[in-house]
Length: 128
Image (tube, rainbow, N blue to C red; front, side, top):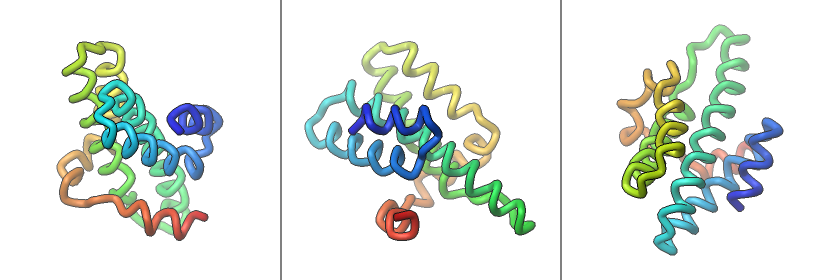
């Protein structure tokens, strides 16, 4: 699932990459695999960034303000990935997570990462 998520994200297909990354993260966390969870959390953060950009582009055309859910979810996943990478000493992973956390939209919504839980079930229902 994690490889599928990364492959789909490389092609910009967040509609397949996002649920695959979330399932991979859930699986790795359930099996207590910290390395796999860190990689999956990075993929999930990247998927949320791509999905947020696409959503905001559509909202901009309708003269609506930028949405916050994908950016907050990206912040939550990147924060988790950074935490895991720091604990394992994986500096490249921690730097990749920090790069996501340093993005303007993610930084603006960082404080919402635990307040606004992203509803993967409703997102899948709307985007399938």
